[in-house]
Amino acid sequence: MLMKLQPQIVNIEPCMLIGISDEMSLIHNTTPLLWRRFRTELAATHVADGTAFYSLQQYPPDYFNNFNPAATFVKHALIENNPPNPYPTNWSVFHLQGGVYAVFNHRGGDTGIFQEIYAQWLPQSGYALDNRPHFEKLPANYIPGHPDSEEEIYIPIR
Image (cartoon, rainbow, N blue to C red; front, side, top):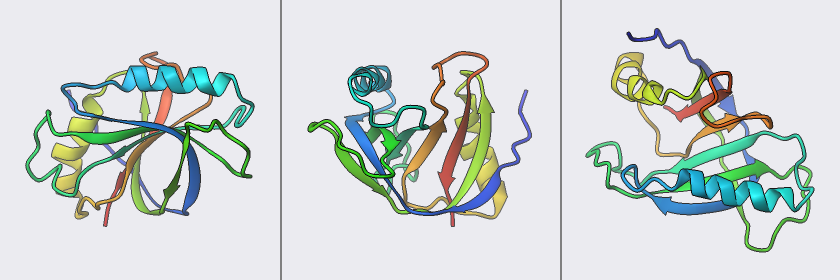
């Protein structure tokens, strides 16, 4: 059964994020390992107690033109660093450039929403996918896969 997606269209401001990243594909998805490492390292700091998390994907320009689940992309586990605080030396800074995004509110662990966004909502929306990072904004108390977990899915559009 398909949901009726009704995103909010927003123009976000640039922001500075910090964290770690890994190259992966959908077939060799190492997201849980990336986040486990990030959460462990974050627990040893006091950088961003209570702030939201950003699960951010950087896709190559042609990633969605010729979809291949073995194609690689870079996944980031990030938090905002505002105001700037010291952070672990193995972390890097990611400057999110901002721009127009379709924001979908999602609850639970079902990832089928992404198929619905890209295969149904986007082609019918009048918008085109933009070549900027895609990300999910997760609250500080987010529990992966939990049916009550809520997140915001940000899809770059033009």
